[in-house]
Image (cartoon, rainbow, N blue to C red; front, side, top):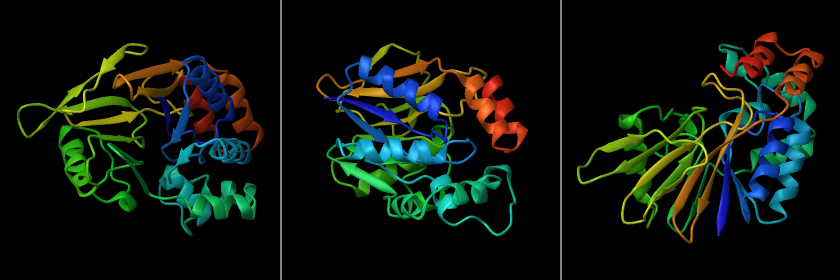
Length: 250
């Protein structure tokens, strides 16, 4: 089976549609969404509805911190990440908010654990930026029997960590389009990047595919109409910073 792993869409319908089209061209048979469907971008309703439809075809979805904030916006905006939560809340219907609210924090499927942030405390939204944080997350995943792979997002970067002969993890920097062997006799942790808000200086959307027959993981970069996504942010009256970020990729 080929599984498409998508995270951090952030209400960017242009990027989501481009990644879905690309994934289908890669013969993806199932989709998994690793949180943050909304926040920052101008099309939360369209993104949520698109993903809800895909769940009827067997897609799996977990909750991200922006999904949680969209359901219950903070009373005081203390950081840039919360600045669009109230607007997103108002755009979403009651049915959308109820659906987001009932999403699980973690999904365990055989050898695979999906979690938006770190597995050691999913509801605290800790970032997995380096080997130390990846080790903590992978160690915590041991509470779910049989887990060999942890997949998440949250950091808007594509990364792959694996446990070698020592207890610590080693970080590998993947190249787009290159299938990497990830045999199940090792333990692996990956952040699959952001569909809707890349932050590495490139504007192309990010996602990954996992081939569970061959146990190969491939990271992808997908061009999309980021100018249209930025224009939608401006038209909605959202902060200019989020439009510029799509245009600059950082």
